[in-house]
Amino acid sequence: MRTEPVGRIPKSFAWRQQWRQGFGLLALIGVGAAMTSLALGHSDPRMFGQSASATTAPAKSASAKSAPASAKAAVREVKLPPNVKGQESLFSLAQAQAGPQTSMIKTYGLVVPNSQAMVDVNIAVSGQVVAVYVRVGDGVRKGQPIASVFNPEFITTQRGYLEFLKNEEKLQVLREEGRLPNYLKDAKENLRWWGMNDKQIAALIEQGEVVEHIILNAPTDGFVTDLFVQPGSLVNAGDRTMKQFVLVGKAIARMVASNNSHWLEGYVFPDQRTLLRPGLPARISLPDGRHLERHINQVLPVVDPVTQRARFLVDLGQTPAGLAVGQTVNISLQLGKRTGTWVPRQAVLGQAISPVVYVQVAPGRYLRKPVVVLGETPALLQLEGVEAGEKVVVAGKMMLEGLYRISAGPGADAGDHHHDH
Image 1 (tube, helix red, strand yellow):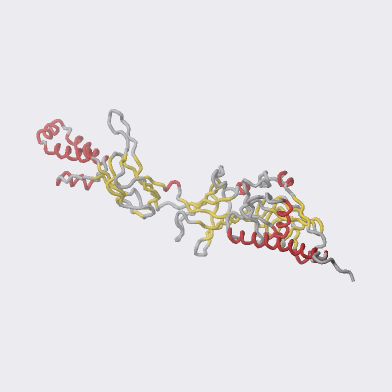
Image 2: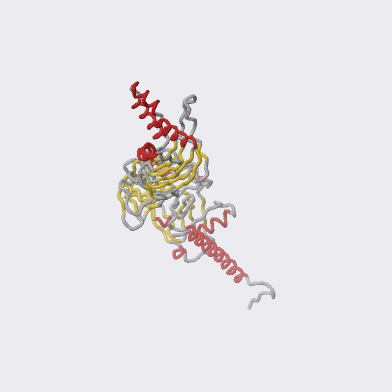
């Protein structure tokens, strides 16, 4: 019987140890990637998005008919190690199908004020803020005080008006000349310009009550979104002298009128913007489980440079109870019947990165293909970059991804966070 020298590990045992270590490494890679996906969350609205920094991201828009050149150049082959047994149990495959499907885009949106509902609370005179009576988020009624401002010239103007009313000699002259009604009218308009209402003017004339502070009231029903001053702030509303003839005014608060409907600002990835158009049906999920059926009113032409998202607007009409400005809701955009190449959702790897699929070209040989997601149904994704009839890996993708990363080195797709559904 053949024996191995003392201290030497049998070759068969060493071979088995290498395979155990290899599969152990793959298992660790799969667990790590799974933990990463759990941390990111399957409900991440950035699902299937294109990463601007990924070197393998397709360069053409979603409207292109063929796979982008950059996607072709980024295709990589992954081979299983030789002598792997039971491949049928490691992977499950599905065939990419061409044809029409009722497609949709699942995304999210933010409830925002109607631009016509934004109202500024302005003051036309300079002064010092004495008090602020509301906070951001407060609901206010028309005529409710927002802030008070002190200006010594305002008090001087009122006292001058009282002195004018006490000067009987001058009043008599104006009566004889027939100019008294105009003088009184102009004086009252001046007081209104300062911010006094008719009730305050009547109290000034009848009782001599001088108003010390200019009160700024809410111009309409609504809620406060911004405050630009605080007690003690100095407000420079511009020069109001006849010499300069300049009247600028100053906004001390901003509010949203409650008699206007809210909008929903939705977000999609830049390569999905070509799929949108005004009038496209949008199904909005409310927090209480109900749904709203609305349509896209406007597709904004510019991609947001900060978020790298394309935006669209939906008029909510009469805002449902439970929805408030700043609230996030889920949206399903109904694209209608779309013809293309479709694969099961589980065949696509990718979360907040350039999506990829694995295509089997022969037993033990797979192509790692970057793709572009053009549309979706509850069970399928429409892809650019995969041909009809190709066999895509549905289960077992993380083993192939682990092999790809080992063979490509530590710099492969830096920053990717794939997960296996």
